[in-house]
Length: 210
View 1 (tube, rainbow, N blue to C red):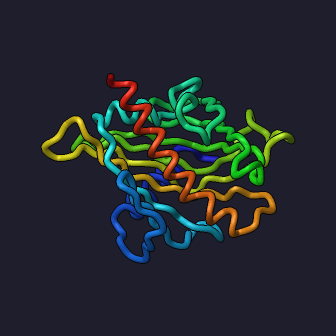
View 2 (cartoon, helix red, strand yellow; view 1 turned 90 degrees about the horizontal axis):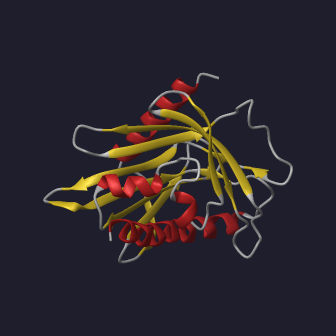
């Protein structure tokens, strides 16, 4: 598999999701976050879009999200058990294995995801990551985990004009949890999981910059 090509394709998908306003339906809105969805074109599930303002600079927000072995993500994200970088392809691209704990009152058992991740910074100061599922010889499926798949997903940490200490976080989630889960469980899980992601990230960033 050409990991560079897969990473670039994920980044192109992310840009297209960002630019295309059509078909989104709001499913949750709070003071912190707005979440919408539309049917995925990648698999028989949904693509979710989340937007919110985080009270910190883009580089500080990104520090909390960055995929790295033993990084900050494991400490604050309740949906992440462990992140391990399996292989570094170059300074911008790596292969990660992420494990997640059981969730939704243990209806969803623990999962593992293997992804290629591309990290880049735009000229306007936006820091972005894009990821998609891959197979890797160093990471065969483990019997104690259900192997899920992330389709093109990731986030943009966008500077807020006129306020360098705020970041617009635009995220896309597109995950096939696999297994034999009822669709009602899947449809309930993602909006609440994404809300938790933003709430816990907010707390982690405030702690980081304090």
